[in-house]
View 1: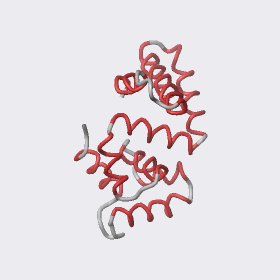
View 2: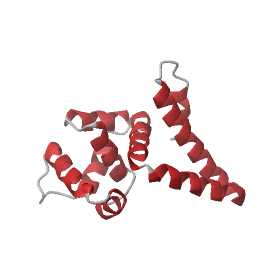
View 3: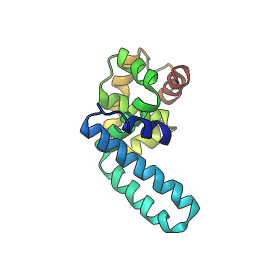
View 4: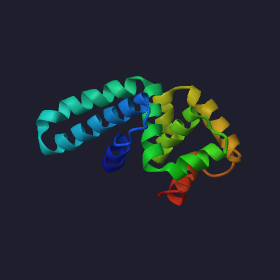
Length: 144
């Protein structure tokens, strides 16, 4: 992810807000790598992640942007189903490995309505596979 984000920053046509989002994500990733080498960065990395995750919409958007760079075919596949940027960001949480219960804990009550809407757009009934499994299958099929 770090290499792909660094490559994306080299794109001179990248919008300012995308460039800033990528830079923030890279900084956080680099701090976590450094925290494995020395305990000095561990607290800084944890604090920065906590701050990023406090603003849920910003975190979901930065996750979507990261996936857009890392897995563009995955994002395109979701867009073809008519998912909005916010819904795609939500799906990226599943793609990262979270399950519905964990996302519900993070998102709150809006999780169920959003999950239901996404399932409908993807053509899944409530009796079909779990959304997390389905999203990870889409990711696996549409990786670079």
